[in-house]
Length: 209
Image (cartoon, rainbow, N blue to C red; front, side):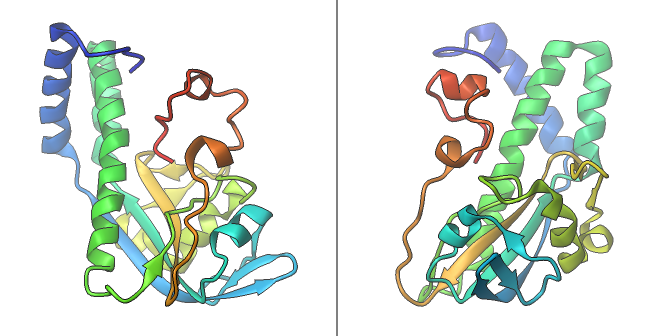
């Protein structure tokens, strides 16, 4: 929200109000699928996906992994409706709701990951890596959703510009290995927008990557 330091009472009260609204309205859902991983000269191929994952970033991210989990998660259309509705009445509240929803979808992904791997203590895994990170094309969003049948299962679709609908949603891939893997760089270091991002210029990572 652009707040520096500890929020004052007014901001804290605004966040408390927004948090209550968010928790009342969102309906978190996620789906996942495990697949095999094959490396080739042009990128990485997943058994469950027709399209090739291109770019050097995903090859480095999945190095040493023979399998992977692809994940899609959403807060549901209610999150978008709430952001839109509050914007008509109170822009500050709408901003707080928007920011809390962004935080919430990351928490949903964290919980999903814990549940997916709860009974698999003998494996090693990478960070979540999404289309649009590094040089992995954002256009692959549609392939992720197709492979997961995400539209039917959790109501998640993608626009012609490769933006997810509902907007407070995430797709990601997590590499799996039976031997230790190097958890590579994440966040600002691999972001294609790091040169123009205001958060990056301030030295603070806040985009959720």
